[in-house]
Every structure is written in structure tokens, then in C-alpha cells.
Image (cartoon, rainbow, N blue to C red; front, side):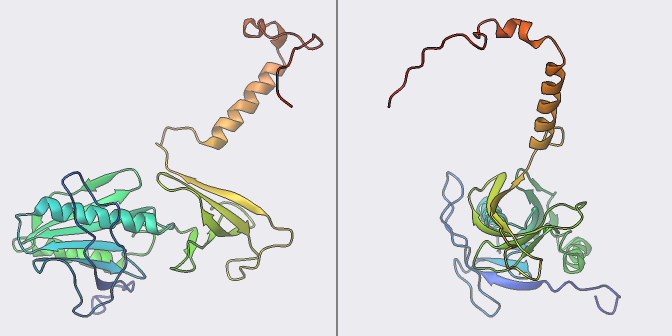
Length: 264
């Protein structure tokens, strides 16, 4: 790649432990995501292994079997490894994966809502495709590999990040997350604003806030859109004869007596 003038991004190949036994009902939720660097260390059956292309974790998981008999199981193992990589790293927007059974190669792409598998090809009859895949992966930048550009991972042991709050905000705001309080399609963190990306000291009088990352369909209204529409409707209502609306007929007017039941 260097001789061809292509910039390398620093991805490296690692072997990781078998992601666990997959039962007939699906994927084992308790599988380990610990990684092992290089060498001859591998676990699981001798005829299969799980590898990883990554900077500091499983950037692109690779599931390999030397036969096509258990292709379904191998692919389930890959999907599990992709899922664990996604949920284990708050900075991932999507992830690629590669499953190989004998000479058959399948490329995978997964977001937090959708997983897509490309048509399988043989690296024996189409080695050019396999070369193109690896050249693309080893020359891609972090954004192209699924990492959110506005989240910088600060440590591997804690879910801590410096978050740039929006691409068009000036000045930029940076937050250090203190706790992930949800997972899935909507991710919510407690966070505190800090001085800068390089200075993680909380700002004076800084208080915990909530950062929320939600995956929505493209035509869905965001919470900000809903709030804006709500206030617009309120303003329109205020300018009308709202007190005479039929929907309010069952509500006693202000000034009448109310009987309130409760406990002291």
C-alpha cells in the first residue's frame, strides 16, 4: 500500500476469544468481549476462530471457519461480535464485519437498527474483491469505519468521552460523560461540561446534564421539532378564542370551587 501511495490508517489484526456458544434460540447474551493481541492464542474449536481488525478494539470483527457445514453458526458468531463492539463503544455509529466459511466470504454492515449482508463471493475465483476489501479497510479513516467524529474515546476501561456538542455550534462545547444510563437505539448519558477537549477539568459551577443520542427514521420528528411545534401551537391558540373550544367544556372555569381528595 505504501508503494502504491495509499495512506495506511494503523488497523491491526488481532485474535479474540470465541464469542461464546450460540444456541438454537439465537445469540448468547453473556458472551465475553475480552480481546487478545496477536500471537498464536486462540480459543474455541480448532476449525474456527474469530479475528479482529482494529485500532484499540474490535473495529472490524472477522469470523472464520475452515468448512461451510456450520455457516449459520459462524455468521451468528460474527453478528454477536459486531453487536458487542457496537454496544461496548459509545463512539460507534456503524460497524463492518467479515464472515468466511471455507473460501466463501461475506461482507456485513450494521447500524444500531439494521444489519445488511452482501452477496457471498469466493476469494479463490475473485481474489480481487478480497484485496479490494482489505485495501479499503486499511486505508479508510475513522469516520468511514463507523466512528462518530464528535465523540473522542478517552479510556477503554470506563465509558468516558469528550463530546463536541454539534457540528455548527460556535464555540464548541465539550462534555465528559460520567454514567451511561441506557442502551439500545437511544443512548442517554449523564455528563458534565469541561474546559476543553484537552482539559477535562469541569467548568466552574458545572452541573450534570443529560446527553441523548437517538436513532430515528429519516422522516421522524426529533424531540426538538416536537417541542418547537408544541410552542407554535400554543402561540396560535393564545391568539384565538380558545376558551370557547368544545374540548374545554368539561373543564370547570377558573374561580369555581374544587373538591380535592388526598392524603396528608
